[in-house]
Image 1: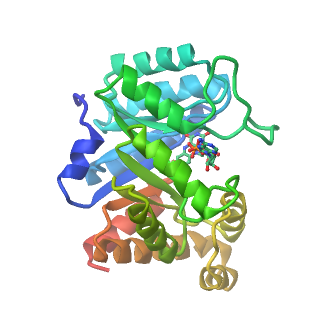
Image 2: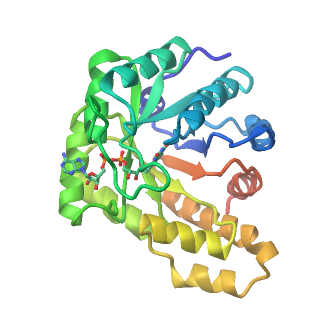
Image 3: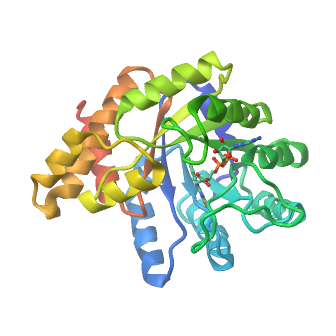
Length: 292
Ligand SMILES: Cc1cc2nc3c(=O)[nH]c(=O)nc-3n(C[C@H](O)[C@H](O)[C@H](O)COP(=O)(O)OP(=O)(O)OC[C@H]3O[C@@H](n4cnc5c(N)ncnc54)[C@H](O)[C@@H]3O)c2cc1C
């Protein structure tokens, strides 16, 4: 069992970090798949792993359950996510207390997506409206926690324009965030411009690029639509021209090329949206060690 490292401290080591995101499995079978993935990734020693936080009561308990398994049985530095959805401030503090008691030292502070079937985020009575308020709450009550926040290279879908989104991101980071993990993107130029604009806006904390190794054409089109991310025609063309069974191979090669370029340009590392599967992540890690 590891004793808990602040991710803030890991960034200070000034070497590229590698992290993986899990999501709370929906059933025991999904849980077994996730554990198999964690076991396969363990020898590669990700600097940290994160686990998302759902909008339904059941999935919240699952986040905690699997966060503990990842920490205690796999020895990962685990950063549970927490969202404002459906929680009062007191409940959020109680959950954070639970994280601290379980030995977690880092938390990803998010506003959260609306629960399934709802199209708009609604503030819970006695709750918080923006992730920046959650960051401030954590900083006030748990100053020792490392805090990650989300950033959107291609703009958060609800934001009216890039400038407003950047201003809101600055408020969030000024509230005490230690680093930003980005929404997925398939064109590195979006990340490079985002970092440049953040620096111009005085946002100086590390910005970890979040990448999704595509598994299929349909999946990548769905994600791009949902996140309003640009789908490079070249990637789409490659997927269209390939047997669907080989799509994960195309996806991991694309991500490997993205990672290689990001590292060459001295990026702070990379975060993989692995979707509880190990194959693409392992292919990317192998590709990197071969010097691709
Ligand atoms: C790395 C990462 C991990 C994620 N993990 C999860 C997860 O585990 N669970 C989950 O449900 N969702 C998750 N999400 C999705 C996220 O919850 C959604 O994108 C959500 O819509 C916004 O969350 P946020 O924390 O970025 O919100 P915020 O930073 O609060 O921003 C939300 C919107 O409000 C605007 N805004 C912010 N502050 C202000 C202000 N003061 N005044 C006016 N407007 C403002 C922003 O510009 C933006 O448009 C994740 C996203 C990322 C990038």
